[in-house]
Image (cartoon, rainbow, N blue to C red; front, side):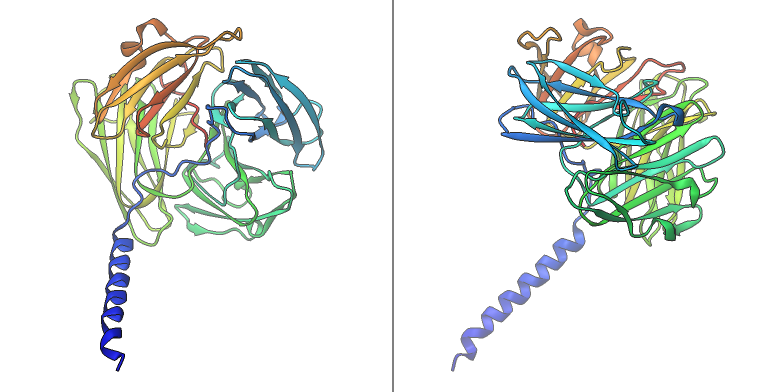
Length: 453
């Protein structure tokens, strides 16, 4: 008797399942996945946390500093935990006044080789950035641990060291596996499986121990228990860089400032974590030149390199913008250097809000605002005073869809941005802020606006 009524319900459920399946199969990841953000600039949170890793003892050549910035008009009590790979450390408390900054060396007073920092903040609006001692790289501190981390382009050749710096911000031990993708294909070294790091402790994985003498290595860290803060430390000759990685592979990426300077090397390095070859297209935009698209294929579980500079098809004419599209999700990184050394930087995801600061004291060689959407956006720029005074609005501007603008052209009063700290807010989360530090050749050190990881 009830069968005729039930039949339509079964049909509806079957159709719903088919539709869900089709939508799932069609879904693609179109942007590099941004890691957990620390940029809670509204200051309304009752408490926040900051986690920073990627520091070594000075003798190991990867030392650095943490800088905490209060972007609000009220003071914050902060408890800072310093930890090392030997499981030792200490805590101290301090007060960070309105719009103040605090810089410190995480290794000071702590016995060990590698170091991490956890900061518990009363309220919101305090952000953190880490800067290498030689001022060749920057990375934001994160607000919570993650369970998946990918990076590309790491180098273990002679004269280079690639280390995964791992900090456990939780009160329980964490366990993770490390696998790699390179010219050797997929490798999961036994010594990097089931690796444990204690509660509120620091650990490091030297990839060169198991992945020997390779120049383009992709990495996947899969956390089996707990959550982690992870940074790739690449030491190449005298140059140290932070690779902040992404949470998952992607079919697209944007690199707004890629040098084409004479005597420079600039590469987009790719790793393919999947079983299907990835066909990659790179659209290169350079001043008034027409540059043909660059293409390459990344083999399954392998790696490949697209050279932007030197390249006979790409003139030496300042900075190029490179947009990447791929038939399969891949991991990408920008590698810049002089041919004798490299510095790595991960692709950015578009965001609504950035903190831009001259944390090295060197100013910037170039700075761009990139709108990744087809629709125009409005942007507000607010300058923070280093003396504790109230912020001042510098400019309100519009950025057309699918365009990049030099900060110098839209904000000429800022010149080289030396000493400036400013908040950049967009009307929609489609903005990328990219900067380069002064180097010779130009463009050797690429950093992003501080948007959290």
